[in-house]
Length: 233
Image 1 (cartoon, one colour):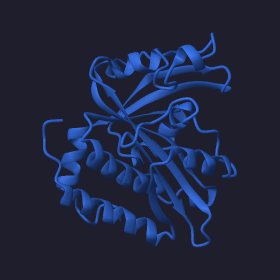
Image 2: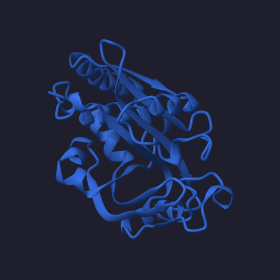
Image 3: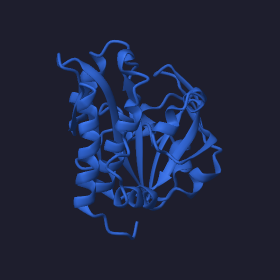
């Protein structure tokens, strides 16, 4: 992304969403140790298993190339979780990265089952090259759902990803029902297409047919630069 990221604008942007979470009784923090993240997710009731993208036993993330977010309530119980990582795709594209299974395993020849597969037919995935920030593993505790938490989490994750990486694209893979319920609209990913990831990971017991959702780094930067402090309300 050619445009310069204004750190002061990002700081103000993040502060507003952090305050919005605090008003709902949630204290947010960001971490970088994915061993710790996996230990938290495993101990969190109702949270599904974290995909191998964010598990160091299958796909180690280099320092500075990933982070996770946690929100806790007044009792210090986990209320929300999310993770993000950077894929450097200067010699590939997001569709190829998915289909090669390298998006899920550092070395598919070692970790992938012979019947593992991923098919990506979303046309825009082939255009995603360069720095691709992948956001996933989103979880919100039941009593905090329906309160706009995905919008707050999107504000934080978009701001942090922009500040850390100045990515060319920010994207996710989501089931169709999240689109139908309007959750993806809250998450501020402006574009979506079917065929993002028709996935089978045998040993993980994963079978998905997800849509690709994305926004460009330039769209996020423009949003941060013109941000109105009243936006979360």
